[in-house]
Length: 482
Image: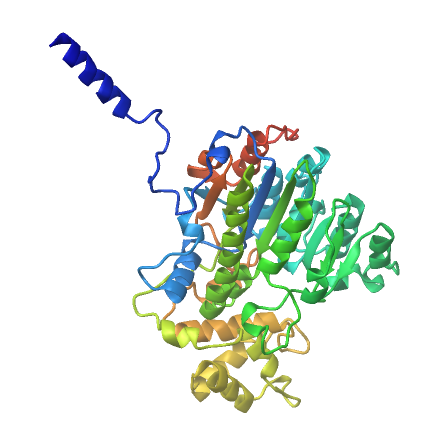
């Protein structure tokens, strides 16, 4: 009897699973199956940071509902680790992209409008430089200009984000091997005191590419350096690429090439990949644009995660810098009508005609544009209100000349007409520091080596510090009072 009892105990013990880690068949990995090698790795060899500028939980919900329906999910929502982050800047409860980018790149709060420097103008250490000093390949990718706030925070130090010509020069001086996005104008002689900055890049061995075909044809090896400038200014919205016959690469195509180049380095890499125009679509209350830009970003996230799963030894952090315009999915929102609008409000603004006698848009062209592109028949009173809203009393010529600002007004009318949830245009107009950003917390998703550290409520300045610590490096941050 005693022998039988001992045998039964041994059989029972052998049947128990060994260890306390996740077992085969466990859920909560989003179906992505984090590899055992990743779980066991001490530090990541590669780090990929992905930023959807302006993305809050509202933008996530709009993209999910529009693309997959109420029971569907975005790919990024399947990632195994999730946190929320607060985003306030040093001088405001609501951050702009300059201060937010600086927080995410340097681990320091700064004032709205500043890039890579503290409130007193002291230069801060970028996480990109930390990884470059370790012999890793580094780079930035954006669907905005490569010199705008978010990428600029990783590669430059200027006291105001408007200095994009100086940011372009600092990209050159930093010898960052990968920079892909828009903003060619800031590299040209007329914005560089007569110097041909593109020629200087070429002399340093950079390949300059200006279309998706040229980018695809870049040959990659350990010495490849590429500057992609695919638009004079912002890259086009996803919605406008077809109607404008765009030859620009998508965020996915730029991300693929950046990883292809960076992964040639046996010591690893650090990349920042930005879906920038989520923010711009949100400013314009453009729900169709939010949907398309978010899906463009989500497709790139899926590629990056699949690459990380296949190769291992990689940390991927998917996040936002701030939320824009308090976007919400309302009960009465007309999703089908919003999805049927096939171009951006900015494109609509470009189709309106000017009455030379008033220097404002003609009544008939305003009416026609809203009917043709948004299926909305505006009353005379609504047209008059729109014309008042695009009239700038501080400008001697009157009318707003920046088409994206006119687009903001067009988008607000469309959102109101189709009952989409967004803060009122009056609040956006009064938000001089940010143009309609909010203090809403933003999501942080993580996958791979060290991803389990991204949990709970974070301050945005904690994120780069965590990444550097997970990678086993030191930030050498200057003293601060955060």
